[in-house]
Image 1 (cartoon, rainbow, N blue to C red):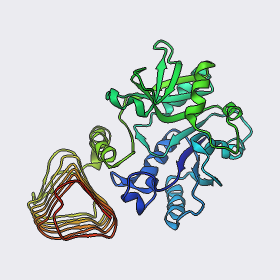
Image 2: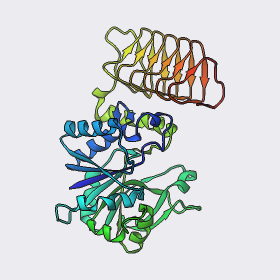
Image 3: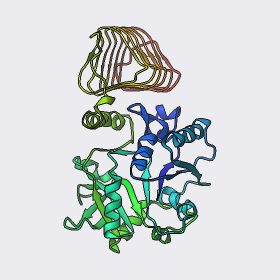
Length: 371
């Protein structure tokens, strides 16, 4: 059985951090988003994954990472390059020959690269095989009804799970159940997708629903679509909470010498350094090679690889990019730094979005983009 991860373009979301790396290679809780997805696919029994990309030139970081992660996971992982952007359905249509190369009618999984969840892929596959429809879509409930207009909404037969209607970005309330961006398709789906043109899944799903060929599988765990930095940071807490129950050894505990304090769920890379008197947590991730000085307070934030926070500084609800340095006695609140951002000592930085390779010498007290 095979799977497709629909990557599309590299630099469309989560700027400024995706100005340095493609979104799938962005670390989330010290593992790349792509690694989270590939590991879930492997655990579901998938051995071959196609990455649908429409970038004409792949950076060396991409090719090297794909090669290394495939080796580490013991999977076949291959990039399939589209000549032009073909949409999320056109992307796996372009890979039809590779998906169907085995000549059987095995279904295949499709995952959007900006989706992170608990990935109940075995349940999804079981549901697909049980009902025998052309597509089974993972669904989740969206409590914030004001956001429903931004998603594909499904109306489900509560008894059978069959999708009766699919409405993309409805302007009025239809249902609180949305498409979670993870699917199982039967190969017959390719007959519904016109090759060589841009086609989106949201064009296909209404027809599948009306022809009784769309099944749903409800996700009971957490789900997030990585659209911006707030969605990224908002997903850290639920992910760490899940780890507390499923893999508690991945979370940090208090140090043996009691030199610093851990509050709540914190992920601390083994190669990170934390100074005496610092307090980390809750909802904190500290990446590889990060250095945290004495008396630092970090809450609701992620520090990417090589970041440094110097003594007596507060970092709250922020994303700190690779190799960025925050000077002593500073306050950084609700901000996002790209790669290699330097913050002078004693500054207040509130609501700032700072592009890579910038230096701040004055405080920022209101939302501002620093180019």
